[in-house]
Amino acid sequence: MDGCRPLSRVARAAPEEWTPVCLVVDIPRLGARVLERPGDARGNVAIFRSGDDRVFALDDRCPHRGGPLSQGIVHGDRVACPLHNWNIELDSGAAIAPDEGCAATYPVRVEDGRVFVALDGI
Image (cartoon, rainbow, N blue to C red; front, side, top):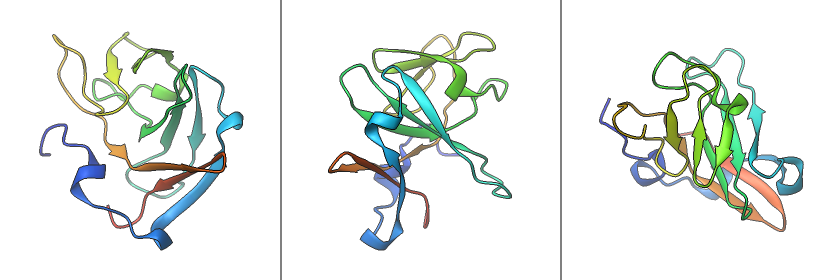
């Protein structure tokens, strides 16, 4: 693992690699929606919507004990893990000090109210 370097800065997805997920309005403000990936060793992806309608995508597991981040409380640009209240930055996936660790992030694009996530090639 190379720290909390966002995957969006590691690899840029070509247009054919964008996966349509849902409409922005399908994600509750300050909430999340889960993109299930059965059989994928990386697990599910949590798609978050901030109070000001920005959208983020992270692995749906806390770097601490694997808690489902999608079930956490979104506040500002962070989500609090429902298991042990670790706070994770939505844009970088980094745990807030004094906690350490990182959840992988994925590039997100919103077009005409539709959310797309780059999952392939990462």
